[in-house]
Length: 235
Image (cartoon, rainbow, N blue to C red; front, top):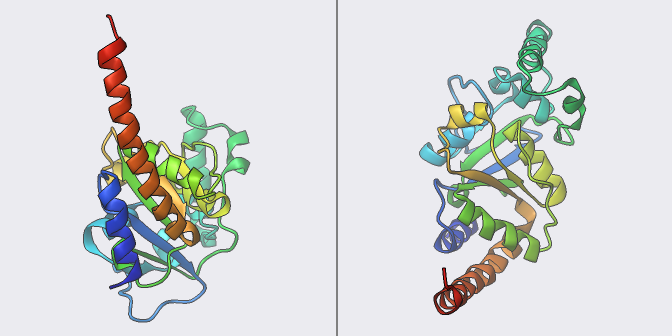
């Protein structure tokens, strides 16, 4: 069995997720034996939904040009004729009060621009993931966060817009939680009640082992709290 398949099954037994976990790998070459994406998407995070639903594929930098902000977090340079799109997008965000100019330099980026990006459901990952994206309700993300802490993935602060910055943040800090952003929620159809949690690929085995302990501990403590509420609550 693909080792990532057993990890996905192990994690899925412990937490209730809204969709399959997605493995993302940034490469300095185009991979063999992985289908190349054909078509167009409005954002890089759109590929998360596509991978969760349809399986493994890879993109090249040009596939990300439609999203200037996502290109920025992935350190993908826009061609000269499309550079004005970044200023137009940022200008709109500034004008409506979505972000401030001072926010832009604080957005995490990949260490180096990729030549290709592989997306796949975790259990079908054709190459070792650099980062894995989980989506689920706060109760599930709580368990993922506690497991990451137990595994020694210190984690970045809780992140908001843009959602895609959670990937480089998790790769640097070991894990990152994201509330999502309006663009991501539209492009990926993420339910209003779901959040994201990203985990660095190299800590996945420790993370899964920690999740076994954390999920079991929460069940025990949930029963303990229920008994205390029934015996002690008077109102």
